[in-house]
Amino acid sequence: MIEVALAPFMPWIILSGISLGFFGIAAGIFSHWLRIKHGYPLENAWGKSVYPQRNDETVERVRLLSQENAQLRAELGAVKDRLANVERIVTDGAHQLDREIDALRSRSN
Image 1 (cartoon, rainbow, N blue to C red):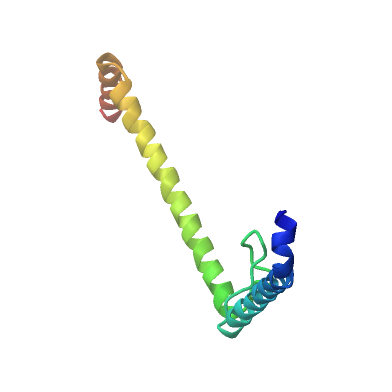
Image 2: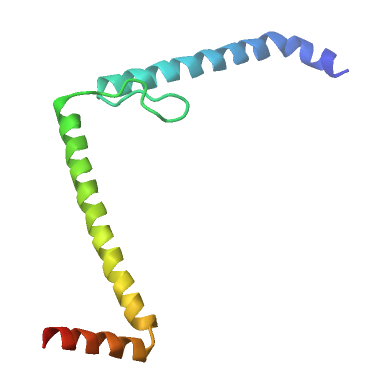
């Protein structure tokens, strides 16, 4: 019953499906063309660059970011050391701290 009711519209349904597919493909091509035209890197399905640009500016940017990363890691290491000392002072008993202070005083005299 449904097939009989849809039979006269079947060419339109098929044409609509083909048109929708064509416009989807055309929109994808147009999107890629715009990305290439404006200098954006192309991406695969996972969002990674297909052909990453390698020019002097990007190489310099990577070098600066690597330097900053190394500086931040060194600073983080120093902060961790200081935090460990503060934790040791706070968590140690008062007697242990008194003994260490007395030991330091006796060394300086």
